[in-house]
Image (cartoon, rainbow over all chains, first blue to last red; front, side, top):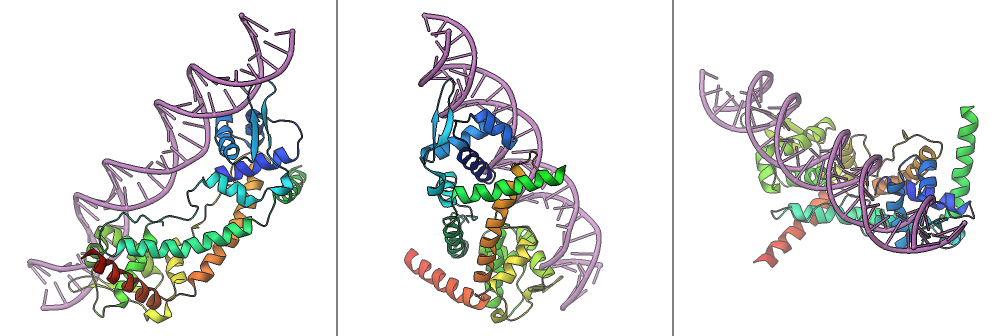
Length: 144
Length: 144
DNA sequence: ATAAATCGTAACTGACTTAGTTACGATTAG
DNA sequence: CTAATCGTAACTAAGTCAGTTACGATTTAT
């Protein structure tokens, strides 16, 4: 999950700024990784209906809905896919004390995760893309 | 870090409920792991002044301050020790886009981590211990 | 129909992390 | 001096994960 979320945001932002379908190879090259890694992320976004993908010549992916209607929370949930960002402490450990403590800590962290999710829910892909695009531009200016 | 935090809470709670110094072996047995693992956690708590440890015969660890004056935030920070709970996305990746996205996501998550910390700061070891102790008791009742 | 492009996904690898174990020197009480 | 206890290094085994290779499935163009 760790590294898939930024990749997912790259995909969503890039697709938001282009009208044509983009191939996993293009997305991979612009992000700096391999097409298979991209396709693994695309598969999750696809399952969530956030992108729509066509195989074959001239194929590739496009946004499933408008960039203004998709929040970073939806992207996060598509990638996290049931698993948790916050460390999940195993309750399988033995003894009377360890599982109770694990449960206690998990509750504390679940609240924090919910706070994160509602924050992500307040940012759309369109807004994120504008912000990131601006940063990339000024980074490139500085590099000259 | 993942599994060390519940262990740290076990240590703090157990020490809070006893006046005598407890050995790493006792703490390990009651938690269900090995003394070395416990000592690794104790070393961090020690560095933060949350526990005080004596070597030699009759040695062991006691709380460094009163349980009512120590928050779960302090325990967390002693264990996390500069590293982050939230995933830290590497900015070392190449390309113009990836590092910017990593930075963007990190900012989002840093806010969430701060929210978690302030929540942990509102619970003392004493309160946590009362809560957990109650749960352990009722878990044991159910198991009979 | 065939060829070329593209996706989907499985299998493998190498790097990294981490809990657990073993071991041993340092410290301290009696 | 002895026994108990800590501190810590070194090793191991398991798990995770990004990256790569490979190949079948799908689609368009001719």
